[in-house]
Length: 64
Ligand SMILES: [Zn+2]
Image (cartoon, rainbow, N blue to C red; front, side, top):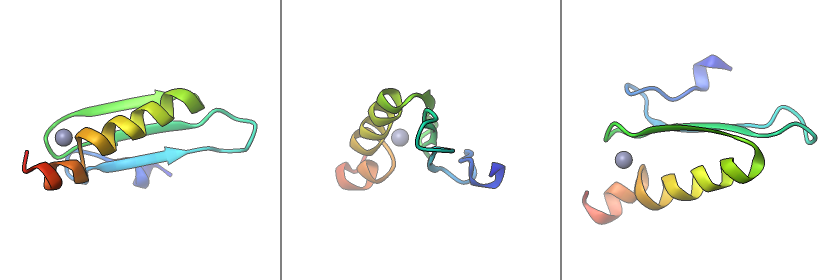
């Protein structure tokens, strides 16, 4: 699934949860240069919330 990992050239948010019992992992790269990774359901949720609130589509809403 490496092709789904976001990069500075293809920014975005990718979440992986191999199985219901396995911890989720996520990686995010924003076109502004920010990047983050998270492992574990709680950390992944925090990453997704922070990314969507401050990066990615949020840049378009706020003009940042
Ligand atoms: Zn950003």
